[in-house]
Image: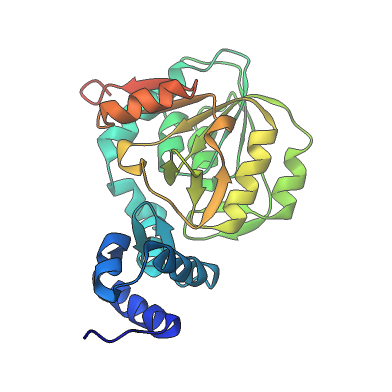
Length: 264
């Protein structure tokens, strides 16, 4: 007869499995421990509350691996899916109108938007990305507002209460929001809590919220939730997104734009 484990023993073994495989599945755990799915879900919920793992559909993932994947330095992020980001940035720039006031969130995809503003003469641009501010400085004709706050060295951006309070002075036409992870059930998320809080303030300050992200970011979750998908008006991504995902997004009433990678 197979040994019956206590909840405490199961949770210890679960963490051991997660450290080896980075992802575990509820269906496998039910068979391994010969307990109900409800018991496994309770174990996972308890470990998630203790910040020891992150629950995802069908199981859980190693939260430390998740941080390693998501919170990359800006230099490393620039190398990932570069062609997709260039195409998305160019497409996003085409949605701007002359005389708009816009917010460019920090990130490498939003940086590509800043590189594609040659056709405009009068824009007011608010950003917390120092790399984006430097790119905008080259135009010498836009009004550029850089949010103050605490420096996040990994993303070369500012976060914190100072940045959030300054945003309360503005109401902008469009927000271009760089997204680390998007999930149909849980919404958009990011590895950093302070970044999530600032993104929420950006959403409150914008008439239209446009999420810009390459297709690799779909059906993923990061640690800090920014907002539900109901807060998003439009999404710009690349053709790598699945047909099923396209249909589900459009059913939610979100305008979906597909950037052409072959014509960046």
